[in-house]
Length: 138
Image 1 (cartoon, rainbow, N blue to C red):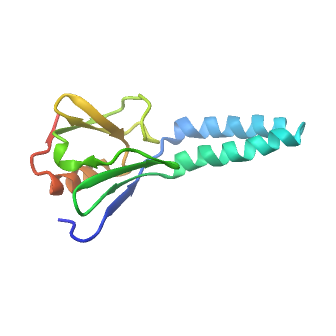
Image 2 (image 1 turned 90 degrees about the horizontal axis):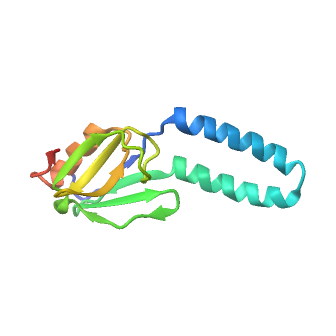
Image 3 (image 1 turned 90 degrees about the vertical axis):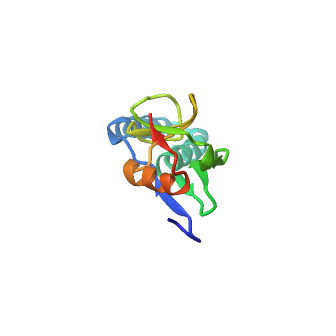
């Protein structure tokens, strides 16, 4: 059991999806910014924003049984782990705070609360189960 400390895990990254998108974005950005300093002023913050989403998506399980989800600079509503009834391993490509398609859907009864992609799904589930012993695989 985690006591007195938070458990933090980064999102896995599906490079076969993000790699080509980032390369295409960099090439088109380079070609565009050669033409205009205004485009450069727009391109740099947009690039930083996209990279923050890819590299700063993470999940924190607090010692008091809460799940905090962050995607880039965006925090999601905090979830009470005791309200999670089921989990399911999934590859659902629906928009979610997940940088990988190796995902974990968390449910309250039949309603999806959030879909995340912790880099080690099995370990993440084990830590969730430390806070909610009735958590079941769907």
